[in-house]
Image 1 (cartoon, rainbow, N blue to C red):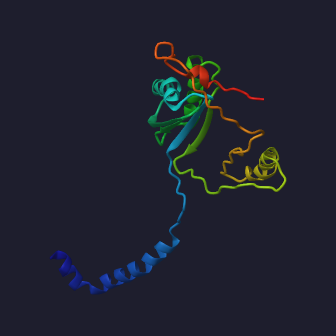
Image 2 (cartoon, helix red, strand yellow; image 1 turned 90 degrees about the vertical axis):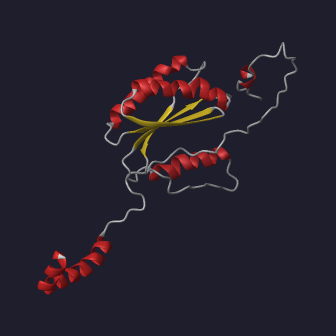
Image 3 (spheres, one colour; image 1 turned 135 degrees about the vertical axis):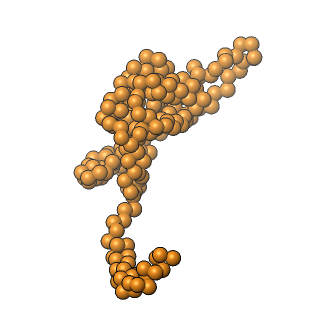
Length: 213
């Protein structure tokens, strides 16, 4: 009721306000910055463990689970952890709070990774540790092909010729070329003949990498 009385007493004031809204609205919409990939300040550290021949269930039990337990006791400001285990590969993503000091977090993750090497399976290698944030997404995928070139030559071209100029772009993260092999891979199917009493509980000895000449 009071607003209606004020509107009747000062009609020109509300007309001017309406015109200002009509003009300022489209201008504000046109000048508002737009980003296809907004900056989401959720720092993430990805830790990649590799162990050739280890099946996903053993990869999760012998490497991934131990690493996650160690993270929760030695690394500060963890928001949550995601982990996936594959054949010979374990990927653990550690999501941190937005106000975390990523330098300290990276040092803590690296330290606990080196400490756990003694508890990992024999001959386990240190993991690959990558830093990024939740808004980091791949924007281009480049494939190389060459008639008469070997896979090793294509890998060398991608690493030394194509990748080198791209790493100078600000903010760009360029991985190593993959899917290029220096030789051919051969797979062998082994069927052990053993009864229930003599057969071992696990086939881990048979999963050891074998080089066939």
